[in-house]
Image 1 (tube, chains in turn yellow, red, cyan, brown):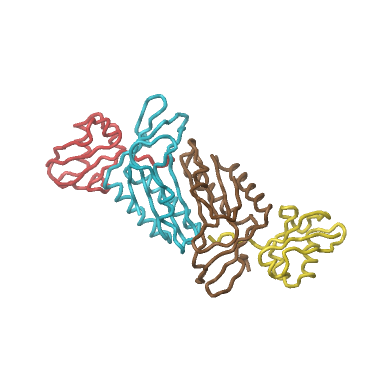
Image 2 (cartoon, helix red, strand yellow):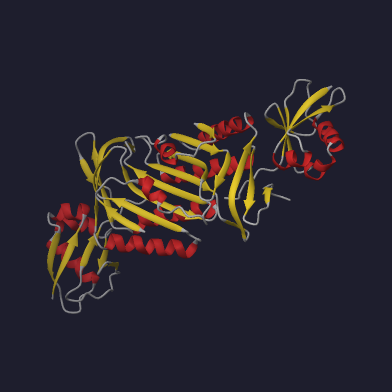
Length: 83
Length: 83
Length: 137
Length: 137
């Protein structure tokens, strides 16, 4: 299954791309997205654990299933509390 | 001793005047101001206990001494907390 | 900065006056003439102050507020006289480096203003009656 | 009402948009580009959002806020792109019948916005370096 993941902020800078096409297993979950992202983009792996993942515009935990046409996004921590 | 007292808001309406000249004893205090005001303006007496008294622009308790040229004011409760 | 005025309050100017490059947060409070109070309809308010003491107390409140929070700048303006429904009677703007400080400082300033500053309001009700608002009666 | 824009925020219009006759209190929060952060000097910020999700989360925060306080009206605007020192990146205005409600609701809305909405900022430091701000690093 092929899924497109959008990257933002430092994750985008570290990966060098603002979107990535991932090859995922059938019945993939968010956990698989994280694993494949870390493998494909080693530079992002340090930040990955602190990032949230959104599926179709909603925060999704590691068990959340990914469908083939899902919009997936990797969201680094937002800047909360700084002003 | 003669002292002028300014009246505001409902106290002014009840007294019918916005200032009053009071005849006070020597060494008068704020307590004397309250007593003479109640006697001279019976209509104000009900509100008087809930009013603050200011002497020279500062809140003053009943023991506060009044000098002959003091500016004295009777301050009904302010409208705190209503917006 | 504090001000008492009989003119309409330009709250945009009040907020602009406190903006500073070292302050990432500005909180502005506006108090306006509200239509309904405890089920009664207001058509207008009249505000009266004890001049001199009102300004003095507002200046003290600014000092108190600055002593408790890292205020960049603050401005409190109270309007006196007759105000129709929706008009602004009071504006308080505070800038601080961070938002937690700015919210707390602005809240403190307006609470103290309503507690301590000798300014009174008279409700003009839609039924034709009017009365001074003196809490605790 | 929520809005994401690349234009300068007209916070006066944001505040005007929430004024209502049944609301005696309006609280407006402005977040601005602050010069100093932990002893380092900022010259500008760049804000980036995940479009679509950012608006959706802001709309949810408005709903949450309205469910908790008697909000008359509220408006949240976030600006994206490049902002110089002192420019306003976010404005939140809330009207309620009473001030306690308006302060709490405005505070809640900006706190949730900073916690949940996928918008990131990049600091452009005076030493020529720049970095994305990702708390927790």
